[in-house]
Image (tube, rainbow, N blue to C red; front, side, top):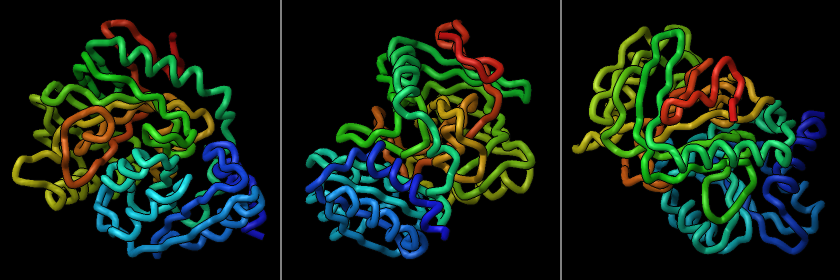
Length: 322
């Protein structure tokens, strides 16, 4: 019965977002904790006349960890890669090289057995696409982003010379596609983040936030992380993922959630896409327009944000002003 309920979500993912057509080879990449949904995805793939290939690997140790060589090789030999995994494979060489070889890639980080039932998959992806692209274009044209909230966030980032990204959910060979995590985002200029981010949504590996996590930025890096038990856990995660250059602490991404169907549910796919939220990521951005290579990428989601680009408000009270 559960498989029947998951079928509409699987169809939206395979047919609409991945654009799978007859005769294509589709790699369904899972790990030992997420492989239960592989059969549903494979069944839908077969129904479209395409050939599914399923692979399962041990879960990585964290977001952005390198994939096994046989997996990376297989990703370059298919038309489509669909990756419902525990940890995000988006910020890996394997994903980047697969797309360079011509594969369309969809990632589903923090997947679970009910991921195909997520409300975000009910979005009208085609209708949302122009708005996502419009906001990305504003980011491309902008010089400075300022984010504020009533909780105390006041953060500025330079985006001058960087290209905005329209993550519409549709698989492609150029950029990350994270299914219903629809967003407009950009890699800020390294060293430019200044101010305070009060995180009250979620953080990967930490979960939904009860006690706000206060992150202070100076010269582009997080220099202080305070709050309650969530802040303690996040500091521990970052220490474990740090390197000698402290790259994990750089502000690597700024994004605006654009999916009105998404809800905060302790899943990167849904949380980052929630309309009216923003996220600022720490760590790697080398694959999204920046130069930072760290041992991870951690998106901090903030609710009810006010966003200004060069002094012009484009988001306030969960409404866009375009």
